[in-house]
Image (cartoon, rainbow, N blue to C red):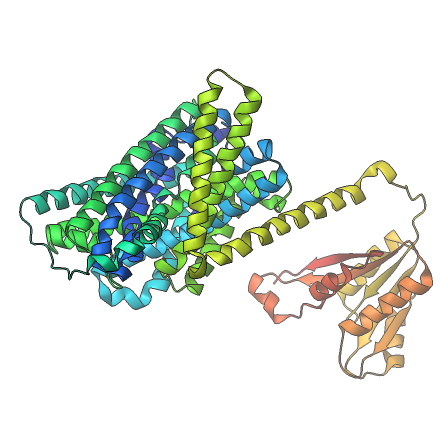
Length: 604
């Protein structure tokens, strides 16, 4: 009979099956490119949103901004192509920075990437739900709940394994690519064959020209959301089938071609039709409605847009767990993130990502425009550190052709650093300041975790271990009364130490002499200490008594032996108090106290 966990995520996989979980190029494009491709749904809108406040004339700046972004895209793509060849083990910016720039830049890159992955899930899912609420406005008020539900579905699919998630998501991803090209080409064809263009009120040119440079930078900063997700291929190289470097490079460049052509076509179409961002309808929805009306094709485009935006979260569910496992192996994150789960995926990282992204969606009310400024800083910070590290790498290696490789990565480093400064400046008041504070806070957390693990290793080292020959210890047995569980615990206590004390907390005001006489009838060789508790507290008198034993007996160890019974059914446990569990937790911080229990399993 399969358990609930097996019904949800599937049967456990053996370690030897890990090669079967590797991704082909077709599956990898669906898993790793969905985040980057999905940015076509909102990158153009973010550019126009930065321009629309200055009037309709300023919207013409979207075209040069789009070409600037595509140029930057190819600089980053080619630079990451070199990273994949140099570091086929994955890890992206974190690994490159650690090997070439030092541990502090690596931790900054790791923090930026982890933040980016969490925000990517929140942004993409919120944008996906926005695509549906544009087509069905009555669902607008339910957008937060729908977003959280979508995150849960994608998280569950990823817990089932990489191959299974790829099989589920490949169809919608490729359908979106087809629909996006249909929309982009169809809208341009419709415009040039005489489609009616909405009238847009003009703004005098002189009110725009003095601000043209600033507006162009704002549009550029907004549209740079199109570059998010590129690093996922470099981070997850080991998810590919052999030859991993070759397959990852092909997917990276394929991704670049698709993104560049779609982004330019959609931006041009939006410009030609004079579209502006609306609160309740996305640019893609407006473009689809003008091109195909509100028939089946329009709804197909909206549904596939919603699907790709939600599935864009899948890229993060692939990248975040792998990156967190690498950082955890370096002991900068809890070691639980480093372990593979039953389905040969990093389950703890997947669960944490889902919970963190869900919390962000709730806090920011699933507002795409409020979330986007938060994660662009982390994206370009990791880009810049990665490319700077690659410059150092080629200077050290000096492999054939290293001169042009250095030039390529240097251009990438300088360009992304400039963009980082622009994005941070333009988006600072919109929320980017939060990330500028969060990154050093996370780096500090990394350091504290590493320090803790180092201290634990030092204190557990056998180098200075002093073996104790004759261990002296008193066994304290808290007993609620005379029953089979208590008597069984006493028998076990006698077997491990000649010095046993039973203790009873009298909360009901019973006569202590009568309690003692009943005890002596059943147990002759173990003294009973009765602690009167007029305020009906149980734990405080017990803890005080154990402290006194620890102080005055001067033993090496005080053993607290808890008699417990286990009900036959799980639901019966809520009918009994949990004093033993609470006492165990309270005593866990006392260095000279050992807590154990003797359980009696009930039959019915």
